[in-house]
Picture (tube, rainbow, N blue to C red):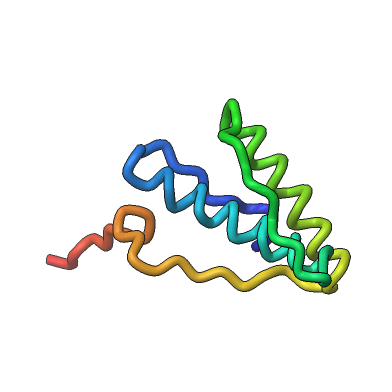
Length: 89
């Protein structure tokens, strides 16, 4: 994941972003805590900007430890992955 984060405004897709954010945080946590300590519980963030900043910090820590960004694939997110392609007449 690079500087572009998927930010959604639809409530139906909000959990996809939140789940992806936690996946990135967990990836970084496992790299920076190799002894197997579980990721501490998260509390709701007051707004999207605070969540994004937290994920960016975790992402940078993971990248510093591993030298790479994580590979992320979201499956089943129809409303996020939908692309409208105009049909030729």
